Length: 485
Image 1 (cartoon, helix red, strand yellow):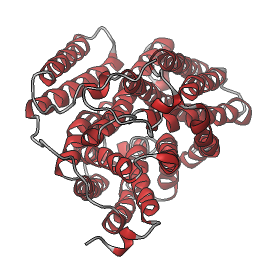
Image 2: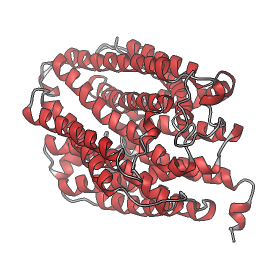
Image 3: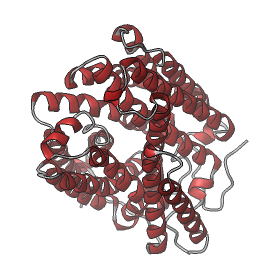
Image 4: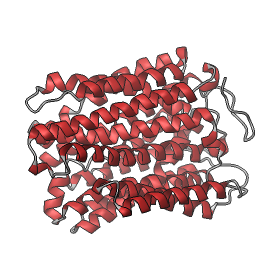
């Protein structure tokens, strides 16, 4: 018998609140510790090499395990996976927040990523089941997309506040509050669902895709020391080979971890690529923006966090407009124009100077960038799951999140390489503010180029009638044709 709370007409919207809160935690945890890193490094006596792994360990374990997490959600039960993921994430956050050595903090962050890889696909799959079609689904995905788009910037603001007024450890311990709300809300408002039919796990596929993505991301992280580094080349090449073997295995097994039609569908494949580019901008460009605010403009942690607010505010203010336009013009025009708006904002941001005024050089760019991201993330969340059969809801959700994390990790490495070339490979303390600003400008230009590429992807791949691109269109079968006109 279902709970009276779950049977209440408003229960779905309370469930949306719980699911969106989960997405906020998963996304903001990728950036919340960035501002706290200097204090954590001193407190735990970490060298610079270990410090970077506090950020990398989370993205690496998260991105590499998302596909497996998606299948666990589909087969084991989405609510059950959600609840276990919540408990594990809270435990990992407590362990990391109480760390007494650098390796403990890194291990805790890696464990956070492991359980986030269970939480994220379970949450999005639950949302897909709760709101299968129609106007309510568009509204639900608008809320979810807004949270996803603003999460990285919210993490910086919250991290700055906690670091300045409490302690760096609270950037990790604050997750216990979100976990408590998620567990209570999940128990009250979420209902169980799972995929029907053959639920055998593709163990070889899980091993290959996890090791392949992990190796690839690790290789790109080594690229910060030089693209010609033999270890960089070796790990990137090994990652590509492992992923190629994974694709081959998926064509041979009867119950693949990643049914290839999920990603080879042209429209969804385009959405996943755009998601990867958007992730690189939200994770990479916002990190270098933080450096500019603190190192060049001399802001404190809290001030830098507040200075980042125009970005999420722009997204939230224009989310309603983007939602209304989605039903009228469809996602394709928005996915073409939105990235170009973001690119224009990044070009404007690239004109920063060491003595420039924040309200003239930075704030307007962030506001416009946030506006553009509203027209990217809201249609993207819909298009990425268009036509996905219920049996594959979890794995499609996992690919969506994995594209964001892997794209962010790789993009950050590319931006770091661009920055290093401009500053001549010197550390921040060895060059002047003008050179540092030039490096940050180069990053923003690189990010703008990426968003132009995202627009081109939308032009060439996100094609079809508006009715086919929106989720209320017909659900495809495994053998149905690609929705391209």
